[in-house]
Amino acid sequence: MNNAPEFGKVVIFGVGLIGGSFALGLKAAGQVEEVVGFGRSLSSLTQALDLGIIDRVGANPGQEVSDADLVLIATPVGQMPEIMARIAPYLGPQTVVTDGGSTKADVAAAARASFGDRLGQFVPAHPIAGAENSGAAAARADLYVGKKVVLTPLPENSVLNVARVRSAWEWCGALIHELTPAEHDRVFAAVSHLPHLLSFALVHDLAVRDDSELYFSFAASGFRDFTRIAASHPEMWRDVCLANRVALLEELDRYRAQLDALRDALQRGDGAQLEATFDLARTARRAWAADKQ
Amino acid sequence: MNNAPEFGKVVIFGVGLIGGSFALGLKAAGQVEEVVGFGRSLSSLTQALDLGIIDRVGANPGQEVSDADLVLIATPVGQMPEIMARIAPYLGPQTVVTDGGSTKADVAAAARASFGDRLGQFVPAHPIAGAENSGAAAARADLYVGKKVVLTPLPENSVLNVARVRSAWEWCGALIHELTPAEHDRVFAAVSHLPHLLSFALVHDLAVRDDSELYFSFAASGFRDFTRIAASHPEMWRDVCLANRVALLEELDRYRAQLDALRDALQRGDGAQLEATFDLARTARRAWAADKQ
Image 1 (spheres, helix red, strand yellow):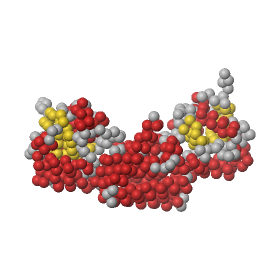
Image 2 (cartoon, chains in turn purple, yellow):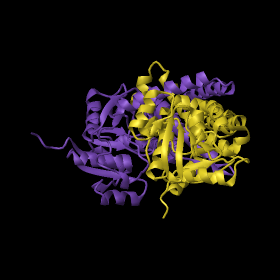
Image 3 (cartoon, helix red, strand yellow):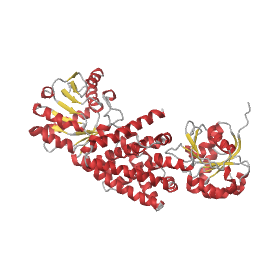
Image 4 (spheres, helix red, strand yellow):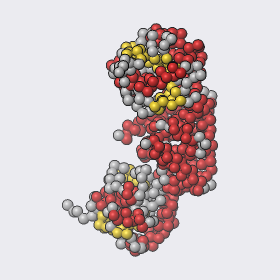
């Protein structure tokens, strides 16, 4: 049995929850020799060092990626284009790059603009493993175990490069799925981005009232569940909404039409239509929950 | 110390989660001698008997309430007027009646129409203790422990009758609050009824698509939380929406205006407005959660 790690040097941009857990997962699997980290603040890098997430802080991005086997860009989506532009000229021939962004068409477009004839070395990914907490301290070796990671390969990716990125995420315990970037963004606009927008909107709508205390004081478990995602990171979700604007607008308009129909039914006292809508939703929600178990 | 139960005979209409838990709570506190149940189906009544929720199945509503100390109407709101009309002529002078409905102005109006000069014996209540599961099997003696129950007393209620109903809910472990029926309906339209409608709408919107499986397969924890209340009881929520139609329409229109504003911000790429909205929501949601602990 060959016990040599699959990856020698791995470089991580953004040593928070997503990047830190990726490093810890590869280390736990014994599949990496050295992890080098870059980050926005010295304190988060120091913390990542102390926690054993990274082995050392990177000196120069171009130099570090030139002899790396694998690079993960795990920053907010808005910062990715700049990082891509900085590292693109220095990628070694053996280096594969992936990311952890929640949107994919914009990341693919940024990669297309930056990587030039090395575009084939970038395989976009979206790990579906959010958490309310963020930062290096929240990173866990098992964050991705049993979780989905969606790869959205580009036409320029070789089969080998897709396989290498796939393998890295699999060593972290993830279940790999493939979609096109456009499919990915359409699906996640509907099941993730829109619900976040709707949840933020509800809490905002209550919070701006003069008597908001009265409302919040009677909010109970239904409200708690519905609004849990309204405690998510505003800057990250601003970037996600802007990055996936087209698909999100489409989903939002579809949803608004659905609300208009429910409003009409409510206005005219059409209990049968309300019940039919609720009933179909409940059946689907229960089937989904049963499926997940 | 006097260990005699506060209530002799208690009659419950609707032996599901709400009514069953009320019976079990009073029994656990040793505050009831006999619980008599009415229900729509023989099977639920048999189950309630088997589970020790009720001591016997009621024979005739008028006869059973005539010597009852306490009556709880815990059916869907839509069935309450008929039950009130049936029992009103037979209430004993010592009988107090309360209910477990999620809306209060309509229940108060139905009571006003049915109880005549005995209106003072009816003290409306809303226990804030829903659950995804319903039915007698879901009933628990501790369902109301530490939960809010909102009483919406009528001008006709005597201080004594309010105190007796209050005491019954307190024996179940509840924390009692008082609002007017109109205040109650306005607050719960915003923090409960609207979120249910929005959650049902989202799941319905996905479920009717030809490729709904694709969407559901990538739905994760944010979706799970946001849509947990979409698994709620369709008939109950139809009744709640219809019963609280005026306040709910007002909240829905306010929310639609908020969505329109977010749509405009998204359309024009106004990241600052999106972030400000999300940030205010997150701050309010975190303050609310901290308050609850």
